[in-house]
Amino acid sequence: MPARVSVVCGQVAGYNTEPPYHPDTAWPEWAGREVSAGPNPAYRMVRQALADLGLDRPHYGTESWNPLGDFIRPGETVVIKPNFVISRNRKGRTLDAIVTHPSVLRAVADYVFLALGGSGRIVIADTPQMDCNWDELMRYERLDSVIEYYRSVLAFPLELYDLRNFQVIDPDIPPYSTNRKPLPGDPKGTVKVDLGARSAFFGLAGEERMYGADYDRKETIALHSGGRHEYHLARTILAADTVISVPKMKVHKKVGVTLNLKGLVGTVSNKNCLVHYRLGTPREGGDQLPETVVGSDRMVVRIQRWLMDRTMARQSGFGDRLYGAALGFYRACVKPFRHVTAATLLQDDGNWSGNDSCWRMTADLARIFFFASANGELLPSPQRKHFCVVDGVIGGELEGPLSASPIAAGCIVAGEHPFAVDMVTTRLMGFDVTKVKQFGAALSGQSEFGIGSSSEIAPVVNGSPVGANEFFGRDWKSPVPAFQPHPGWIGAIELK
Image (cartoon, rainbow, N blue to C red):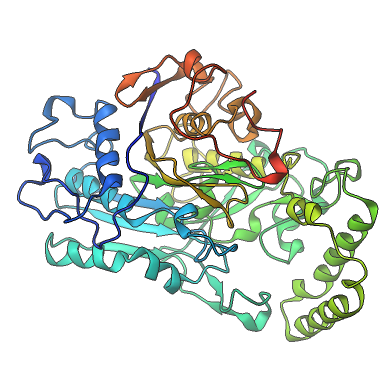
């Protein structure tokens, strides 16, 4: 069967900002429940997207409509995984362009609650970046009000978890050893999964150049060497019966777009097992920077990494002091006379279309998400049910994912197959899915993920089916404004 994906767009590109984000209409399935005094377009679009998929069609418009009933059974555990990557936009712009909005999460939680029939667990969980301030993020999300509503009115315990093992205390200064505090982590613990020969990194040269999410490259290299490709994931997510992914619609500096697949980084408890790029240029065996970067810039960047390997990577007071002294010397004696150009700063750290590492990490996480058991064993069939709802009411373009500019996309995208939903969303954004390497596993024609090509996707746009060949073709006009890619991806991802 074709993978159906629904798109609802063209409505108000804005959010309800009144917690706990009630629907603005007394829908039949929520008869007698509270409604919002103001409009809630996100809730309305989520509901319409579920209806346009034909879910529980016989009961649509009645009190017994249960659109997620095919994915969720009473008594099960459902994890709703948002995009909670960071607590502030690094360019001072709105967080609406970066993290999943709470009004979308409220709508998703309500239909999960209907499917559970009052019995089971709803867990909202993610593992943000280490420099995300959870308390600051929750002041934006106001999920405490949703949790209280569920407790006092629905008599149902909605759970919320930050699954990280540590966080940076002050995101405005480097993550020194003294600027970190331990966190409880996943209450269910960590699962280790070694993909071995099934990893997209298997047989790839240059493992000694690998760079992860933190400064200790030795750990990243150790987890990806000698035929070993090991990932550490949150058991709460892998042990769920159903995972509902709710990412933000935005561009990404390392993989082009970040949606459901790249969002699987939020299932990982130890981010340093994630290979982000490899040091150097392609001729040197890396993908950190393109060959076009001038030699003097390369030299400065190389010295920076050399210093970090010998200072910050130590995660000790001595290493912190060494790095602080080197940083002070650079700012006082080097930067006034020789600073790295703006273009190099934008592309450094593998932030360009030639990054040949990060898409492999994304593909590895997809394989784990589909086939790894709650104990880390790789099995031949999918191990959990999944569903996807993309928050594209306000999207993120340009310097995504952490400094994205807001774009009024005004849409919600939904479906049960993350590859299909991501490809449909990517085309809506004005990009060519064949130029996004993370989709390669689904475009190979022999995909173990259940989709062999984009022709096996059945998009439904505002209730009307669109043929796959037409939808993914160059002449189909997207109802969503074209997103501007990250500067390092200009000319490499657009549909031409």
